[in-house]
Amino acid sequence: MQNALITGITGQDGSYLAELLLSKGYEVHGVIRRASTFNTGRLDHIYVDPHTPSARLFLHYGDLSTSSRLIDLIYSIRPDEVYHLGAQSHVMVSFENPEYTGDITALGTTRLLDAIRRSGVTTRFYQASSSEMFGAAPPPQNEQTPFHPRSPYGAAKVYAYWVAINYREAYGMFCSNGILFNHESPRRGPTFVTRKITRAVAHILAGKQDKLYLGNLEAKRDWGYAPEYVESMWKMLQRERPDDYVLGTGESHAIREFVTQAFEYAGLDWRKHVFIDDRYKRPAEVDFLLADPTKAERELGWTPRISFRELVRIMVDGDMESLGLTCRGEGARILREKFGAWHQWNNSVSDNLKAAVGAVLG
Ligand code: NAP
Ligand code: F7E
Image (tube, rainbow, N blue to C red; front, side):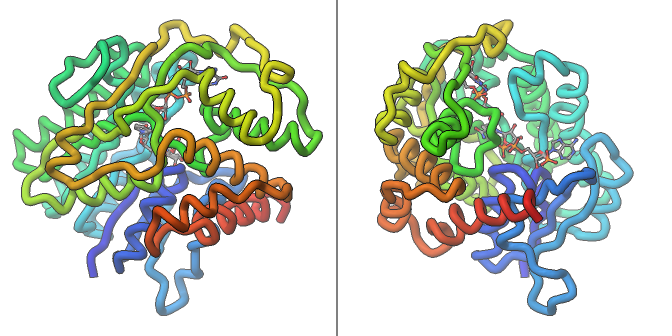
């Protein structure tokens, strides 16, 4: 049986990737941080007691700040594949905590790569690189575009990108970078702009909120649907040779368009609810991201199926359902039509949201 280790398994991507790998028959190990509150809400619906003979998902405490623990985990699990998704991943937070972001997002990658190198375990390594590395570089951006990061987060990811390539060149390790453009879902953290918007739409409908405060509405992002992006991570590690790939939809939209579509889908007038608060504007902005994913299409056979409009609908429906509101049901229909067995509305959206609510209430 193939086994994989995922850092960041409790995050949006980590939870979808765990589901994908379980569906492929893998044994999946994940690194989680000790917290005084539950941080496994995105995994509750797939978690089974490890004493169960059929259990294939195992969680281990650890932190990207601590090499000794990472070395332990690599030695004891001896993973065939490592998906390194753990990071301080919020751009605005990286301006407030630049040193911590560098320690975890940049140096954390070196700690993990070096743990693998020192252990002598042969494993394939996926590095979660980001379109934030392009920053101010003019669109469209592809694998040849020079990086110009605009935040401590973007700079930390550039470091991690090059360290992964350095371990590939220096030690012959199988290290691939996925340079992923923004990807979202009902499991997106609630302080990223898309989820902040769709969650507010549901809260406004439920009478729990009236105003939504946002920052810059004019920035443009290439937004895709997260479950499709974790499929590309797996594909990268199945290639004969390691390489680096840009993943995105090739379509870009302003924050303002996301707001308009989300509110309109729910039958609300956004002008009555959305207000600007400069607190959410960044010291340096990334104005325009647009992927050129030609290489991934050609070499990985990866083409995104979910459009921008569909993504908005899936997310609004997810947030409405989690509050017990009757949603229009487009989200479930879209997933039924576009996804195969591993990802469906019931096991991947609604069960997960119920589990998250259960963890909070229980
Ligand atoms: P996310 O939801 O913010 O998840 C981040 C994960 O990292 C969480 O599991 C978090 O644990 C963990 N983590 C944070 N600090 C850690 C530490 N010190 N030690 C161990 N684990 C730690 O991020 P995501 O959206 O799933 O993204 C996954 C990866 O892809 C990240 O590296 C992100 O930077 C990168 N990326 C994301 C996008 C995107 O659009 N989503 C695009 C390009 C690249 P807790 O749950 O305990 O906080
Ligand atoms: O911001 C603007 C904000 O925080 C998107 C991370 O996953 O994707 C993500 O980084 C845009 C920016 O994502 C608010 O100024 C306006 O222009 O949702 P975001 P991000 O910064 O693009 C990349 C690819 C990653 O790698 C990162 O890990 O939206 N914006 N008003 C706002 N953003 C937030 N968060 N909150 C607002 O109120």
